[in-house]
Length: 199
View 1 (cartoon, rainbow, N blue to C red):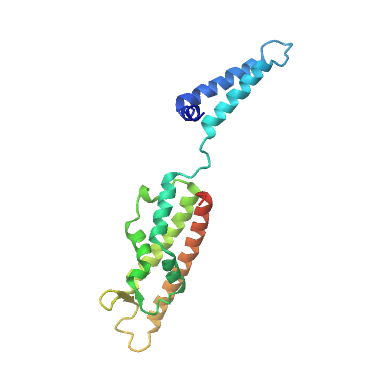
View 2 (cartoon, rainbow, N blue to C red):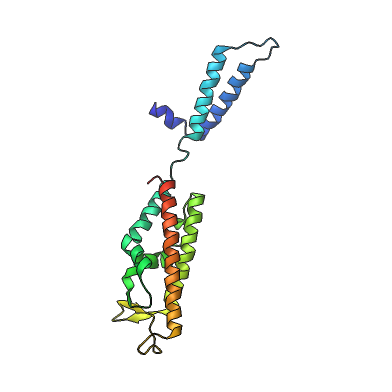
């Protein structure tokens, strides 16, 4: 049965099963006016329909291996600790550069068809995540600078002597809001991915 199932996946088998279905359907209808059920023809038609369904529907609804691998790569990059950091960090304070390394890798390296999902709705959700990653990372790049031997980043500048200036607080607030929105989109994407990919 496995051999038959494998053979039915070829395009030749799909054409043959479709033609067989049409021929047996014509045989079931018959050409005479005094038509009566021809059970052998009906049985052949049913078998032809089943073969056609097998060739065309086998694998429908199964997640694409590329999508599964890409989602696993995403999970390996953006660990729960990084999600927690994005959700809880006040960017007015000093923060470690490696706290958002997964997001930074996606921002700098994940580009092109290799990093796109084949499933349309999943790709649509991922596109929303990518847009927000770009927003967040652009803010970090534009408004922070290295601190403590490059291991940390800070929004503090020379203007921030003692307390943070109003401008710096506004920049930190923008990063906090961007990070919160990114977490929201990450959650929505991951929930959809688990449903689509049946994980």
